Image (cartoon, rainbow, N blue to C red; front, side, top):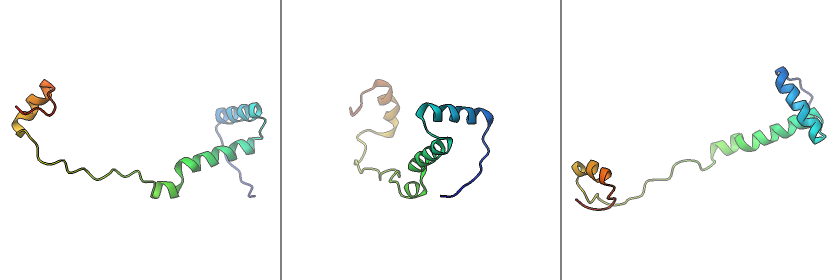
Length: 83
């Protein structure tokens, strides 16, 4: 295991110490758990190929109404109805 030093704002340190005491963990264990959780959420491996790209658009065919009628159709709420 590697030892390291970090600097924390006073309030963050106090909150982490309170959490550690409530969970009966050491501050080091609390920080390790938080680091592991962050890596689960934001790991470079997940972010590189996590499948979050948008899917390809579906080919739905031609519009049934002319573009000039779209505004009127939207205002009427008649989805799919041809004017």
